[in-house]
Image (cartoon, rainbow, N blue to C red; front, side, top):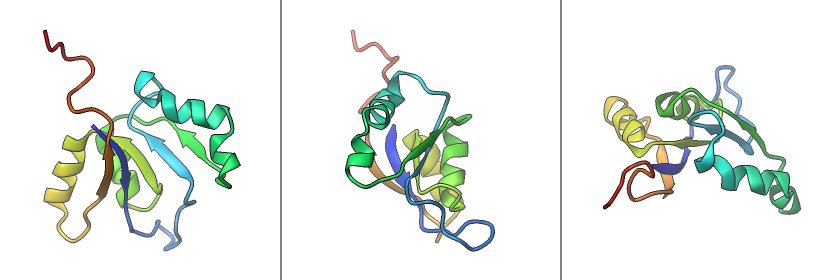
Length: 109
């Protein structure tokens, strides 16, 4: 899973999105907990960041919102990012980090 994706596109009105706006791939669940805890404990604010987090409806939507500039950061599955980048040459979305090296719901035993 891609932990954070970032894009360089402008929003619909040609304006940049709030640099501190995060879009989650799904409703808030366990994988988004670190981001929510940091928000609740004021870690972002302590670093001078005014962060808002919005729940999503899937990884493809999170990638699309970052690609259009509606959000600066998204939490999405790497597969959705790879698919978007393959279908949109020249408009690639950058993956910043990987949260998992395999899906957390997959048993390794």
